[in-house]
Image (cartoon, rainbow, N blue to C red; front, side):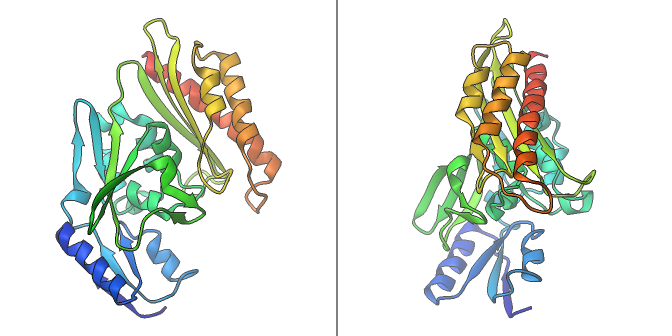
Length: 291
């Protein structure tokens, strides 16, 4: 391992100051929200020296609010805390289930949705789930703040739009209305604690008669970034989300996928599986929205 420094600022201003000063000195920094990916990377693929900036002691990154119109989830809140919030589980069951898939119980005491997003893996479980609930990243920098839709945040494999002097504070999510629900499913070779071979998230809103009035479908681990599949969403809107509609959405997801072949699955296998996952997740979201 190389040479590392560590900073644990207790305010946003202090954290931004550390990032700014390090950047001015030409020094590399890396944000540590939970550290479950950072620490593994430091011991394997990325051993270059850096200053780790721990944001777990900053009030803004630990904020959680559930308002009448909007939900805010701080970037440093561990998954375990979200999993224990019954109101949040009722409003965003698919997103919370996605967070609950990351690692073991011990890992979830540190791992965060914000960290999973910033790691920017094509197989990140929470990213499709965030995309379908229209989550927006709140980003702070010395010059102020900006907002970026999660779908635009990840720009490539392990890459995102954060500048070296910026911090992801958290995620803004529109509060789901009545008869709305989300779901996320993935396939892994093992029973738990593995990386998705394919994943699919669906969020739906139904009218009083059970007809779908809006839908968002996203797929993961089958392209360099998570894909919002507009054709799959269109296949569900205006239907009762029956088998025909779900089959059409599944086909759209398979058509949109552009996976690779590796030791965990072939192109053909991933293409098929992501459609199956879309159909199943769509059925779960429909049942939740109508209950």
